[in-house]
Length: 585
Image 1 (cartoon, helix red, strand yellow):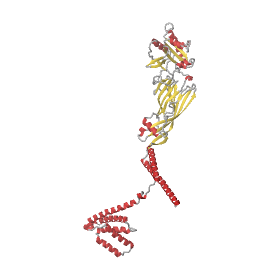
Image 2 (cartoon, helix red, strand yellow):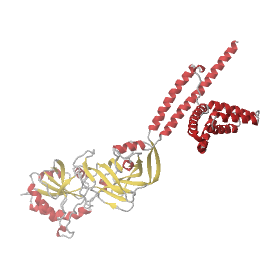
Image 3 (cartoon, helix red, strand yellow):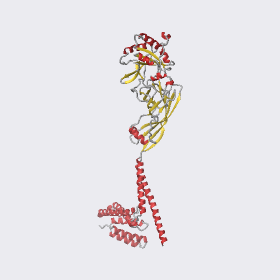
Image 4 (tube, one colour):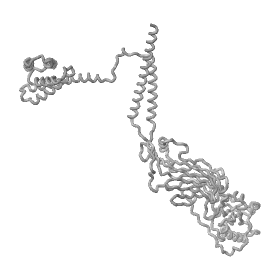
């Protein structure tokens, strides 16, 4: 069987199409052409010829090479379909006809591919000029160097901006759980407030008051320079109330002994091995209740240990309203204060610490006499700790450090002297203090601090957590009360990675301080109010496609602008040259 040669078929059909299009050939001549084709080729090939002829007849204009390739492809596919339909009628040559069709299809596809390539070249955006048609100029080289430098600089800046952490800030209603507690940490030094009476009270807007908090607070005696002068301890808080004799006891009619003064104070201390002194104030209610029992106990002790035969112990008293300097030199801040002096001083050493002795037992006549009897055997002997003696302050100041847990409602921390069985002279109270630290919430770990420093909208100042740190407040006159008002805002930091475990709640505040004269007992107040709004700062990711888009914009923009500038300069230089040539001509 003979196969159609594609070039011959194309030539035959092209001639036939031209004749049909021009109308120059008659129907008989057309018939002769078709008969000649039928005689030349078999029936299977003729199916392809009919398809090809039909496609060319439908073409409105004479085909070119690309059109012929497409028509040949269509004719081949149509012929193959016809062969499959009329396969039984093709006789013994059906397999060879189908093989011929497949071979023709491959040739058509190859020809079509060449046509597609030529069409693809026509849409090239970046057509190339031959090298010999381009011209290099010195001006263009300078502009190219500047453009390349500018591109590099802009790309470096864009990369730095892309690598920089971006955050988004939102202001929302505080999402704290109901009844959540807030931790307040503090470290405050009072140079004129004794640790013996220094207390912390907490009150809030809900009407809740907690008095004399001790479990989470540590006390350290300090001197006037705020240097540590004793051992840090936790006040047990629960103190047994001293007992008093009934006010209608039989010794109420006794004459009161005369108090000693600064002139005979030191003489009295050196004259007796043990001297128990009651520092009192006539206006003090507790001093008035103690006074009869003290006088009766003094009389009995002096009779039991007479001056002529036994001078191991004596009782005495000092009026602190008359001997202000003497009482202050012994760090007396509350009344009554009963001190024990051995060998002309009340300094003792307990566990290597320098302390004073203060009586804290019952204030009845029998208790005082029994206490004196237990002291007598130790007269002139090494010190033995007594159950009714406690360490009295040997310095005038105290440092209070610790924390409290409060509800997230407005409240106040009151630092004040307090004792259930002592009285205080308001004119003697000096609430000057130094704030070593005062902050809300927990101190961030290094990892969370780093995240907070990166994401905080305004950055972190040195006092971002503690606005009062290192500030000093002085009382310039008696009865001065210091009040600090703080407005607290919760800021939640949410890094991109790590989930809830890496988030951190930072409590920032601003503080306003004020000092005024109070008719009541002077205190140091720290009032706080938490905002109902919460600041949420989230780390925002930056997608790579934005960086790529910006990079393309930088390169394309600089390249285009540099090209426009180079074209303008090139045109201007050429115009100038033409003008100069015109003048010379």
